[in-house]
Length: 255
Length: 310
Image (cartoon, rainbow over all chains, first blue to last red; front, side, top):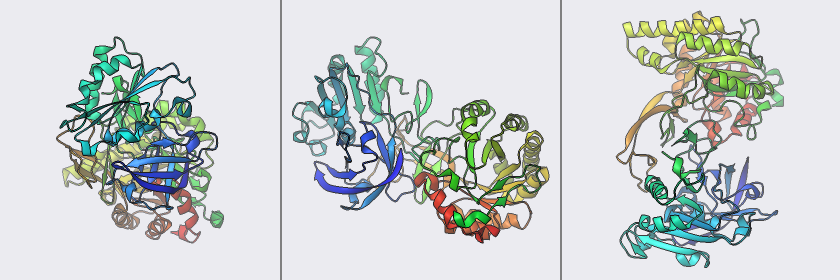
């Protein structure tokens, strides 16, 4: 973990997001899916940024973030620098033995899972041969992440509340079948859905092993290092801190 | 801080061990963790001391989330004093404290005289602890805001806690007073055994956390079962606290002669200098550490030896 200034090397629109590419050679080699950095964007608390894309390898120095247009980082200018602290947190753990990876997200939280959609040997050290399915939900088609921007090998299931794209209704209706198929589930969605998702996993999987289903929880944070005790998340093991114990938690242990 | 070679200050001139700091800058309790959290981000050797904690006699789970509410001009935080308890804190962190290049001051969040004395007694045997800072319970602050019998009771409660801590502590005892009642409590705190006073604990406030996210809304959405929103009461941090704390420390400086430690809304060396000019011997930096951990060393470097004369 270090504090550094990262220049912005590229900015462009990417679907509903603004895509920023940051150069942070001291941080990037240690970033993994679900890890984050805290950015000083001028407010009195730092803002967590999650890598949506990682340049991997020993000389990696770039990572990209995708933010919605109303995010404070969306107004940053090319070649300006951001004061970052990172890498922070405990990320998603996809075991090397996993063969069926299920990703569950709404559009707003999808960028956090995008590094997991890359070929395994570019993100993980495990064996290749991983099938990945994405359950993506949105209110309507205009808020949907463009599927053409996703890797072609990804199996994508779409649900929109108004039926304007994909399945008409909740993504939760797809979830039981996909949860049976998966041997690792990574969720980055509205935390209000987590209880329902956990109940489905309990229904379709007898005695789900630890970390079968992992979920991202990002409460407001102040320090990022566990000093302020502010980012508490209630779990089966008591309050945990999102900045050091998470932000990825065992879905079944969230309360 | 080469300029500050001559800037050593003494926070406990009348105590047998004293509490000498190489310079007047330290992080505030509640902002720096228990000792190792900022090890990779802060040049501790550039500071005058570190203040770790709070700790209580027993472990405390802390407040239910959400605990943080970003507000315009700062942040509101309510942790419920989450900590592992004095015993676990000593077991886990005493070694780290012993390696600290600067004095370690442990902040004890007082609850009752007995529990406070128990904490100070446990810390008495920890060589690495150079000082104890006592935080008074919020109930005292609330009572002092009253008058008559409420004020008398608050004073008696505060005196009982400080006396108990003073009797049990080997190290110098500093007492952090509530912002609102610092003037009312300062003389009693010194008479009860405080070697120095920290002015002041962050003020408390209440915000309404909306249950929905609107574009531009600065209040975060509570994430758990709070769809209709709720109030959260906690401590306020931010630059706007500085004028309040400055006023308070100037009032206290007229009433007592012990060293004063200014705390509240410090984000720059100029802010720290304002406290020193107001009568503080040292300063504590609070929420600015979260935003920029490097600010501690920068503030320490930005103070000249002349500033530390108070």
